[in-house]
Image (cartoon, rainbow, N blue to C red; front, side, top):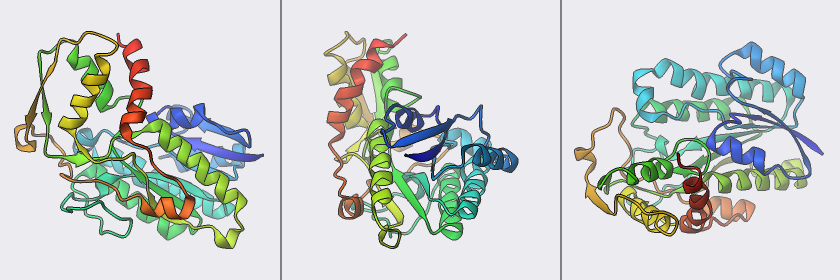
Length: 297
């Protein structure tokens, strides 16, 4: 039995990690109310209480546009908080699983990003997450940085839930069609994290492939194409007011934070090192959308 400390337990991925704890794990989970990772004293106290063998940091400031208005808070959570966790992991000589994002890239590529491609974040959110990655690399050799993208699921706020709410009331939805990525189920990210921990626990220490990995469901799609598929699946369950989706450009939908136009992640490395093969996002979407619709208020 290994002991795992989870931060950010009330977020999309954190919820799914809690729901899928394997039988070889004892989980100590903390949400933002029970652990403020921006407080070094709070982090030290939790480490002393839990005495973990692994740490999964699912805590993050993820409100991309709001981060432009409150960068201090974004950096406090996504960079300073990560520093405190990584430092305690270093002292205890235990691994940290750090969740990161496709938004550390600028989107100027025309092919899926590899882990070795240069980071050039466009937003405060992306920059704060990249700085958090750098902190982990600098402080801690035993780490897995897991970059993922376009997270959706039953818990928390995400594009799928927002679209379904809008589709019940609006006749026409205007969706950006020139930003491309890979929608990824929070449930699948949680599963991958547990698979990685299980494999690390079974590998001799000198053979563990520590480092940065990409994981996302396949295949690449625009927000517009993703929206069309969401509505198609949703109509199996409920009658929607909106049946029309209008493709618009990023320029027609200005936001405070700049988004990468193309942030598709190449997942070959995680397939090679951990034998993890991502499934298609449509399969994942099919599994969760019924639950989302059932609980729409």
